[in-house]
Amino acid sequence: MATKQREAKLLPEVLEFLTQPKRLLIGGEWVEAASGQTFATIDPATDEEICQVPLAGAEDVDRAVSAAREAFEDGRWSQIDPRKRAKVLYAIADALEQKAQTIAQIDTIDNGKPVGFAFGEAIHSAQVYRYFAGWCDKVYGETNPTAPQTFIYTLREPVGVCGQIIPWNFPSAMAAWKVAPALAFGNCTVLKPAEETPLSALFLGQIAQEAGLPDGVLNILTGDGENTGAPLAAHPGLDKIAFTGSTEVGRKILQASSISLARVTLELGGKSPNIVFPDADLSQAVPQSAFGIFFNSGQVCTAGSRLLVDKRVHDQFVEQMTAAAQGWKVGDGLEDGTMVGPLVSRQQLDRVTNYLAIGPSEGAQVATGGKRVEGTKGYFVEPTVFTGVKPDMRIAQEEIFGPVLSVMSFEDTDEAIRMANDTMYGLASAVWTKDLQTAHKVARGIRAGTVWVNTYGPSDPGASFGGFKASGIGRELGVHALDAYTEVKTVWMSL
Ligand code: NDP
Image (cartoon, rainbow, N blue to C red):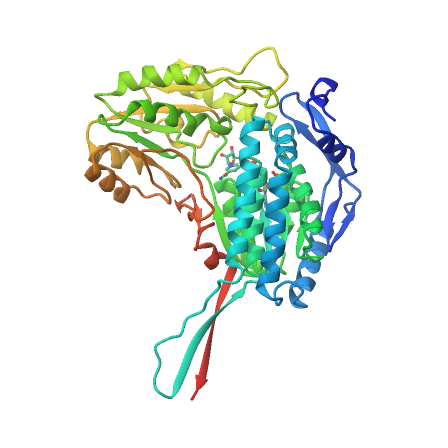
């Protein structure tokens, strides 16, 4: 449990939730792990234990997949009137919205993020459920061109039982991105939240039950990658695996799926270019570029971590960006005014501070930041801007996943596009210019799943999201979620 001082800031409902014993949700029952093992979830602002959570193992994975299979096969969810499914999803959306303050505080103490941003995430999650609730009764097949004696049409059917493994950077939103479309299209699922942030997923389980979701349709297993994630990904009973996380683990998931031949969607890392042309409106480009890298302490797969600036505005932009970075207040996510919370874990702190050392050792200059925040046990790092970065440096190529910006300059549009594409990733990108031709040329030229023009980072349930190259396979959200969570069946009828 959080320290007394922090407890005083928490809502009664949050305190009540935290003191309840934590259980796995399997087949509609809240149960302990078969092994009886638990692990501590840690408050990254204080380095203290919040509570113990069950460590699910292979036996629990088996039970959860069987429960989802039973629920799927008997049609309690997959074969009901889709409007009844929609009703449950709308009820989940309403509850998430009503309890957004509670969810925000839970995510703040589990993840570290500022509570205002966590609140926005909870509201976004509600919007995702609402968006997909609207899809339930709009799943159309097609009629195909046929010969006179034949009638061919297609049906879209649920894929079946899903294993969904999510990361810690957006605990509520990532759960929504996975669970909402799976349920809308009639699937049953086993969700594994990250070991760093298991709490809001368990809270979601309570909400889903209260909203009337039938038993076994959503199962939730807390645990780590080795004991829980790996057996889930390799389980032969899965029809579909959805994963968000590192490219390294994404590769393991793909290998594991060869056992079940489950359909796989992967949302992986990024090293997204944010390109500023000399005609850009800097009064917008600077603050939004700062948001693009410092929001969520830089722990965002789409973080604009490579800033490519036309050399004519480079110095001016760096000066303004440095001032903007210094305005992002670092602190406890429960404190008013905090913009940058702690990193999620000691592991991430070590990873990011290692890159803070690599930058200067490769010859980059520190324009601002560059250090861990001293005098606290929390995992706080200063918002950092590196200048003088060259495209082949590690800080220009590798995903740091912290509030660390690498600034490079370019001569012309072609060079900007070349530099933008010069990584193994292809998740997101942005271009700042008033010139339409430049905007469209760059949008075409960049190999990434998202291009923002004169903005950085917005997300919408209706906007499909995913990566090119090592940033993933498949798309989530929007109309393309249909491909991720349905199978196409072709029916031939002889006339
Ligand atoms: P991981 O890829 O290890 O974690 C993502 C999820 O996968 C977690 O639920 C994790 O479980 C689970 N997992 C880990 N190993 C396995 C496995 N063998 N089989 C199945 N599931 C597994 O990310 P990390 O937390 O280790 O972060 C490392 C780096 O990954 C970050 O610094 C960042 O670069 C990148 N990352 C990218 C994200 C994105 O949004 N694209 C999100 C998070 C990280 P558990 O956490 O419980 O061990």
